[in-house]
Image (cartoon, rainbow, N blue to C red):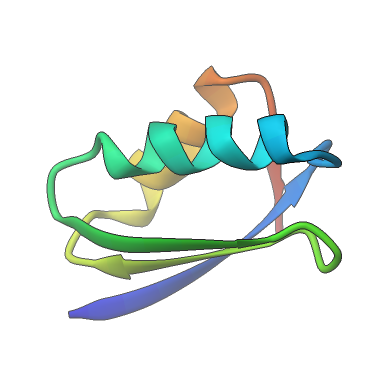
Length: 66
């Protein structure tokens, strides 16, 4: 199992957090998702590819930076 950290711009509330979590949890191979609103970081554990994770976050309206 690998760990991917995504820096996400635009998240500021619990609805934002839930939208990102739900988008990422819907991807095959994702085992856990932890969102840190203060740091604007998302930690994803599992076997999903980074490109899939980035696309899922962008599809719900947020930007992944870095």
